Amino acid sequence: MMSKMKYTPIKKNQLINSISTLKALSHSIQDWQQIMQEFNDLSITQRKDICQEQKRREELLKKRIPNTDKKMYLTCLMVDLNIIASTYDVDPTTVCMCVRFRLNEKLVLK
Image (cartoon, rainbow, N blue to C red; front, top):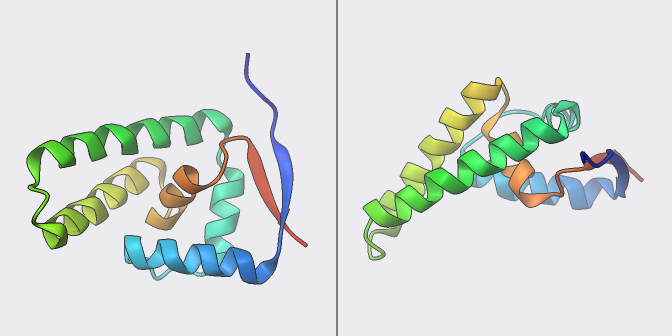
């Protein structure tokens, strides 16, 4: 059974701080409002698929990149985020948001 979308109120500065952190990880230049819109437009199924793909890719990364090479790991992670994003025609930060927030919530500003 598929759960329904729930609207989750979030303070503007809290959302911007979260998105800014995720943008730094994904090296995105997209506006926070566009990222929020993309996130809210994704269905639960799309979000679930994005999370599963990210988890699969991260497991492969952990096997292939030594723990000592953090810079290479982060670079490969950024590339993977961009690959997933291109599959769903969204910004890489939107992919991060799918991992960061619940699958069944749409964000609305307080």
